[in-house]
Image 1 (cartoon, rainbow, N blue to C red):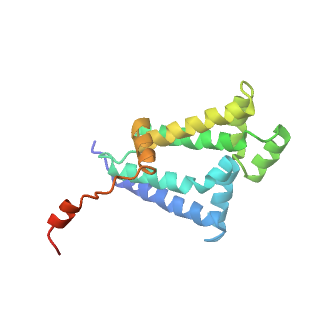
Image 2 (image 1 turned 90 degrees about the vertical axis):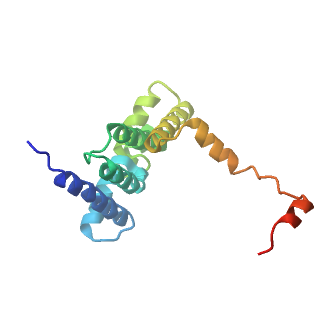
Image 3 (image 1 turned 60 degrees about the vertical axis):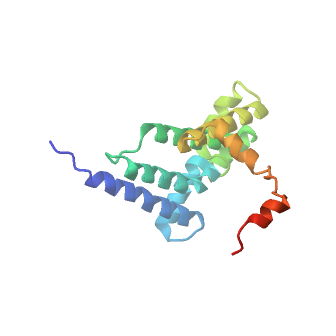
Length: 178
């Protein structure tokens, strides 16, 4: 049996269209369908719904780059870790009563954030829950983009370090004029 990659490629482009619809819906544009798609996404993950279109495009690109047009399982799991942890982190500091109403309204971390924060708050306080969930979101982000902590910290460090300017007058004079 020969495997047809046509439908796998179509699904990748469908992810991109879905991402565009959710993005437009987040700004009350595009009509009822995009707005409803965004509302459902916000109900699930709250404010993280604004990041979901970028994650979907990221996954679609990886699906198209894969030789069999499949989303690598590591990228998919890392994306889920990033979304779920970030949703939970956004929901941690709410009281349980406020958490339920915020989840129903599709704000903070949505229903996913409410569940994740509820689980983490059952064993940790709000500050340590937030730190743990933010750490897990950071790990998910690094895994998504294949970054190591050392490389990420080096890039962050380079933002604040200036290279020493070459002030040697002799070397400046030796350079040919343009």
